[in-house]
Length: 378
Image (tube, rainbow, N blue to C red):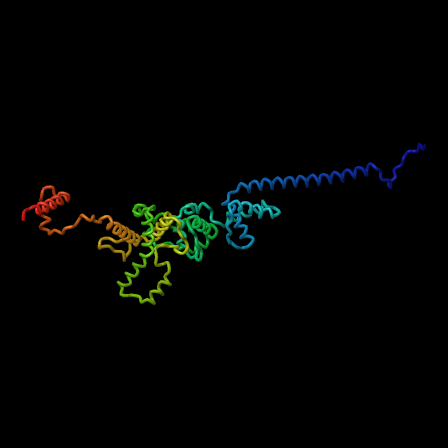
C-alpha cells in the first residue's frame, strides 16, 4: 500500500462536490414546485371565496352585471328574461370563463358605477306605479311598439330605461306646463341632474289628495267611467272650440286629423303601451293622467270675470260635476205612490206662513186638505 501523500489533481471531480450540486438543483426544483403548489392552493382558495361571494349576490344586482357583461361583449343592451335563480348561475358561468374572474367582476362593478344611473335616483319612482307612469309619459316615444301588462312589467321597464340610458332620457323627456318649475343643479352629475330636476318639479306640481278624494279607487264603476271621461274629454273640448271658432271638419278632414293627432287627443297617456290589469292599476293611471294636465291658470278656462281655472282645475271641476249629475238622478227617483205639484208663488208664500212650515208639515197639511175635500158631501 502506497504511503505517498495524495496530490491535487484539477481534472479529478470529487463525488462530494457533485453531491452538493445535485442537492442544490434538487432544492431549487423543490422550492419551485412548492411555490407553484402554494400559488395554486392560494388561487383555488381565492376562487372558492369568490364563488361563495357570488352565491350571496342578490338577483337584482346579478341582472345588472349580466346586462353589462352582454353589452361589453356584444355591444347591445338587448334584454332576455330568465328565472331568478338563473341570473346568478349565468353570472357564475360567464365570469369563470375568464382567467381572472375576480378582475372581470371588478371591471363590471366599475362600469356600473361610472356609467349607469345609481339605484338611489330610481327608488322614488321605481316601486310606485303612479310616478312611473308619469315618468314614462314624458318619453313615451321610447316605448313605441312595446307593451306592458300590469304594474310589475311597467315598473321594471321604466327603471331599466333610466338606469341604462340616462343620457337618452336627458334629451327625450318633455315636462308638462307647470306653475312651479325646479332649477337644474349644475353641481349634480350629468347622469343624475335631470332626473333630480324632474323629481322636484313633479312633487311641486302633482295633483293634491284633496282635489281627487272624491275618486274612490275601489269603485270599479267610477274608475271605468273616469278613465273613459279623461280619454274623450280633450277631444270634446277641442271640437267645442273648433265649432266656436267657426270651423267644422268634414269627414275627410276629421279622419286625417284623427290619424295625425293619435293619442294627443286624450288625457290618458301610454294607451297602446300600458294595459292595466286591475281596478287599482287603472286608478293609478287616472291619477298619473291628471298629474300631467297643466296647472297654470290660463285662458280659455275662464269661469267668470273674477276668477279662472287652470286646465287641470277646469277638467277636474267639470269631471266631478259630471259624476255627480250621473249619480243624482238615481238618488231622486220618486216612488210610484208619490207625485210632484207645482205651486204658484202666492200659494207657496201662504203655505210658508202656516205654523210648522217645514216640508214635512206642509206635505201633511196638503194631504189632509185633499182628504177632507174628498170626504165633503157633494
